[in-house]
Image 1: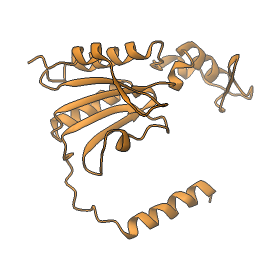
Image 2: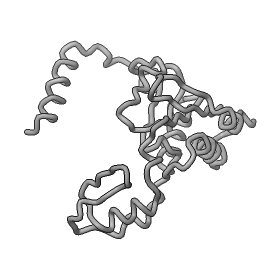
Image 3: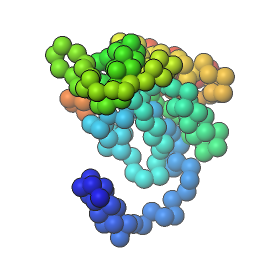
Image 4: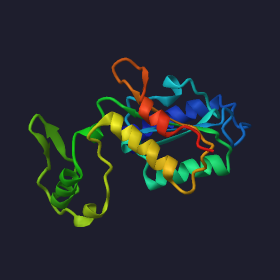
Length: 193
């Protein structure tokens, strides 16, 4: 067993020993959802003041409004009663460090982990790779604020998203811990019905 696996299972044993949240209802108690990045420096429970059962937190690379993220938001609203959504990207995001083309080239070269330095991304050079990456929109980020606007707009315009859900756009500053509103995104996410 790996050391990480042992640490996770040990932490879970300690957590379960005093677990007292088994009666929480399935719908989030505060009736909202957050779409944010998977970056390990972000702790939505802390920056948004959440406890277990408060809100849905949907995470992916970049906190992007992918089809799957929108699917989760629609389920969150339609079946579990969320009434407000937040799209929260962050500063110093890894999704700003590459393009779709770079990702596709790296995958075509090798499926091993790549590295990055001042001159850019580099592959380990060990194949085989795969050309399947060319079929994926990696949703990379060129302009952080604009990506928040684009994602709120994509959600707002989706035919399964009702106009009565306010969608707010923010950028989390990894240096200060502050949420900074992207006013244009929040304007796009304003209730339309």
